Length: 165
Image 1 (cartoon, rainbow, N blue to C red):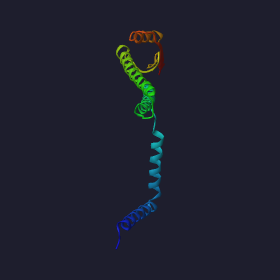
Image 2: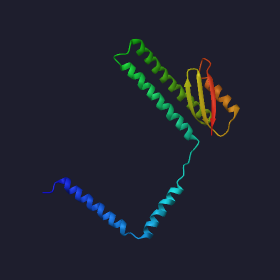
Image 3: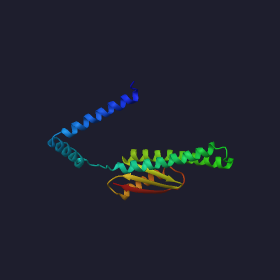
């Protein structure tokens, strides 16, 4: 009696045999046509990079770093071995990360609304770095963006504007 395993083996072996015989009996003209078509397809492929790809890459890298840091802090909070001081420190750092994320969103919306520009914002303590997707590198525009961002805060911030094209 033939079991399922033997039946599958015979079926697949027969299929491979039929395909190999078909391949061997194909004419050389058909094979050359197939190979030419694949070569043309390989030559015509292009990579198009838009100016926003840099901002997207920066945002993804920042998001990954933030998520991994938050995961570490949550592990500390849920750990039985961590002291109360470590847990308090982790909790405060999580609050700081959340505050920075909301500030980043507010700044990006402000720049989009007032200046109609795409941007990436990075906040590290009192340092705010803004990368703008723009072909024009205008000092007046940079100063206006810095003033607008500074108006959001009571205390002085060190704001840096980078133009990326």
